Image (tube, helix red, strand yellow):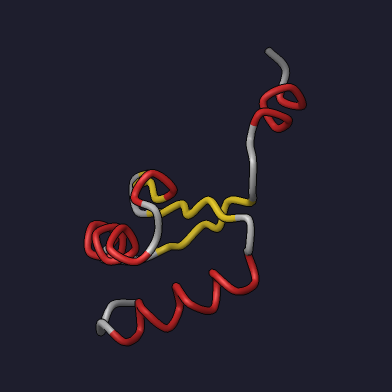
Amino acid sequence: MSLDEVKKLMKGTILEIRSDQPRGVTALLREHFDPDSVGLFGDRVHLITERPEDDSKEAEKLISGAGLH
């Protein structure tokens, strides 16, 4: 399967969040977003969304509000 074919299967946009506390960020985001839309990849957290601008702002508020970076 080509990269373009894989992209067509994906619905939404991936927001990549880098953190020195990725497990904490993942747990926090899974409480506030669909848990299936949040994934942990090393030190990066992926949030799949169909509202990237709104959810990016909301995720940023949640993360900083919880004292995470």
